[in-house]
Image (cartoon, rainbow, N blue to C red):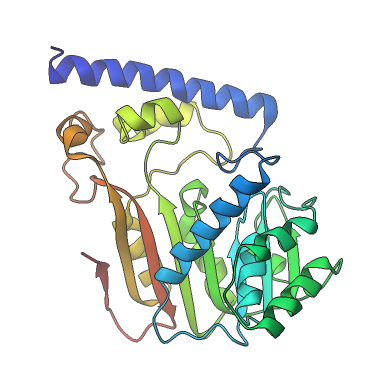
Length: 302
């Protein structure tokens, strides 16, 4: 049986190989695969979007009414389907912004298939959502792309009642700057929900050593840097950054933690900034916040 020291050494060496592979893939192909669902897999995309939308709604305050709201999604990836679902529940508008144009060529017919699988909402709102989604250039269902990811510019003069994202924040090189940008376009009372994936992203090793990206000192990790590389910020870091920009009721709610069978080895051998941190067993979860802040009420949720 392999000792913990030898296993950590093996995972560290293998992890370096995966970091190199990710770097090389990005150099060759750029950022093209925001999730594991193939663009040609229509049913898989529908199931994925319905699952993400249910997760976002689960973390909204119970009293939050979507009707008449203006929604901003950060980095929607390959589909704006989340926006169609918000419109189907009565949202007034949906605007998406991204640094990469991955959803620009989406077939509007896909939105009909998505709505066919989503029975919620009033009939009039659902029909309005279908009509808006089919209308090229509709301001109520808009999309703006800029490699500089200047949120204020990409918002195009809009402000929002709800700001959401899924598996986006962990890819931002400067999350604090992103939070500063979304703060500029948040209306008073704006709610924010962000699902954040904190674990290693390379598929094979993430199942065996989910904390692998935290094993390396910053200089070594940055040798393999590329746009969208996981930034290695932890829940407390995100909570602190939102609170610093004046958001209140800031919480990070864990939704997945390391399997008990892997916990001991996954928490061993981490680089100095991560060793011994209380939140290193969290693999993903949702950050929720409200703007503006009403005081210093922030922290981790149990």
